[in-house]
Amino acid sequence: MDAKELLATYVLSYLKGKKVIGIGTGRTVRKLIEVLSGDDSIRKDSLFIASSIDTEIELSKYGFNVISPLSGIQPLVYIDSFDLVTKNGIMIKGGGGALLREKVLAYFSEYRIFIGEFSKLKDIKIIDVPVEVISISLNYVKKELEKRGFNVKVREGTGKIGPIISDNGNAILDVSVKDEDLCKFDKTVKEIPAVIETGVFCKELYDKIILADEQGKIEEMYAGDGI
Image (cartoon, rainbow, N blue to C red):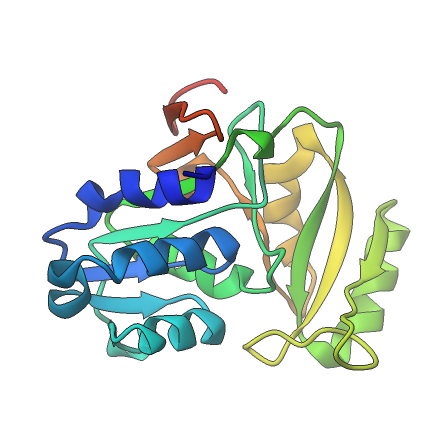
């Protein structure tokens, strides 16, 4: 059993009996959906609110009950993965471009669990942070961040020429930020008009992180813990 499948199986107990479940985006989440599809009580009895079109499609493919965030129904639990978590317990998300809806669901859910491999626990000094911005402001925001001393790249894909456009119709910048400045950056960058959200998830946005490896090791970490 690989780490993704191990994590998916491990968190089943957190999701059983929850009538409304928020769910994130990414390869780890896809494995989670696959594993959840084998549990009829969750698949048939729970409502799912997804953080992306991709996840909505995956859930629908397996016959889950998917509802829109516009319902205003608060998820009892939110489950997602992450791109990396720092030694200080700060997560970075948005590698798949779904950072805005992921942060919205995390903020408005009663309990938030994030799962990932131990290899995503990083001790690095400079971290690329996704920043979602209104598309027409792309160059304005890029130049403003560069003026403030940041290294900035416009995220581009392989399926089209030009910037990647998020599910919300916005562009994404990847900004290099010092690890000790992540939460400060998350707050101050949104003072710039047209910056909507960042992929920095500080400790107030999660309750638990669960890590696993290929050897079957599992460890739970909490927002109050030092990592």
